[in-house]
Structures are given as structure tokens and as C-alpha cells.
Image 1: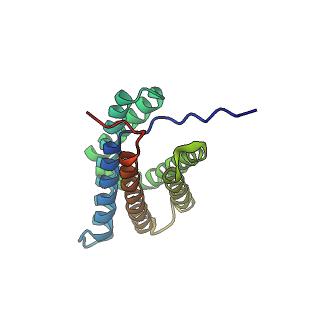
Image 2: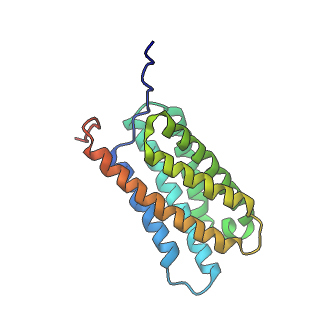
Length: 190
């Protein structure tokens, strides 16, 4: 008895994956190499960059919902949540960075674990090695953030973990985008 092939969700367009990868890499590079004088400045910069990233990612999720109608409910939900969270952080970076740092780090860690598990499941269903690498990184960094969210000095650890994760994730997404573009079964934009 032959098993039917596993259906994999259509990937987002290669150019959208490339854009997200470049954005993640740039944010990671800025977090690592930005000339700041204090940890507070770096932490506030990180908060604003993450807010912008989530805002853009939310918009891109909504765009992807219209280009690929599979799982449209999940894409709509993640797009709206990304836009709302990113907008709030961009509008109130001090509140996000000063009043709720522990909750912010905890939520980001939980999101990383959840996202990583979903990406790993997709990798085993045929989404490819890129999904597996991103999933493993997200779970690792998410667990690190959850385990240490209220520890003294978490701000610096958070910055380093987020920067390294953004750099590696950005490179992996850029590679995936060019693999998508080069594959013969990926529809090319008109």
C-alpha cells in the first residue's frame, strides 16, 4: 500500500522570504554593532527595532494571505497580532522597555518556542531543512529567554540572543529565498 504524499502549504513567494531575511539580518547586525554608549540605549534600540520588525512582518503576513489562500485564518491572525504588537511597541517603546521588560521577554520566549515547534513540525512534513534550522533556533532561544526572563542582566543576554538569532535566521531565510527562486516548481511573480 502506497502512502499519499504529504501536502505542504505553498511557501510564501521567494521575494517575500528574501525581504524578511534581509530585514532580520539587518536588525541583527544593528543590534550587535550599533554604536551605543549604554545598555539602556541598546535595549531601547532593540525594542524599537523589534516593534518595526513585527509591524512589517504582520503586514507581510497579510500580503501572503492574499497570494496564498491556504491557512488564511492563521495568516490573518498572525498578521493582525504582528501589526498590533509592532504598532504598540513603536508608539510606546518606553512602556514596552521599562514597565514590562520581564513580561515582554517572557512572551517573546514563549512565542519563540511555539514558532519553533510549528517550524519543526513543518520541516518533518516536508517543508525542508531551512524550516528545521529556524525551528530549532527559535526553540533554543525561546527556552533561553523563558528560563532567564527575570534574571539580573537579562537585557544584555536578550540583546545578544536576539541579535544572533536574527543574523542566523536572516541568512537562512535569504538562502531559502534563492532556493525557492531557483526551483522549477515555485511560481514566479508576474
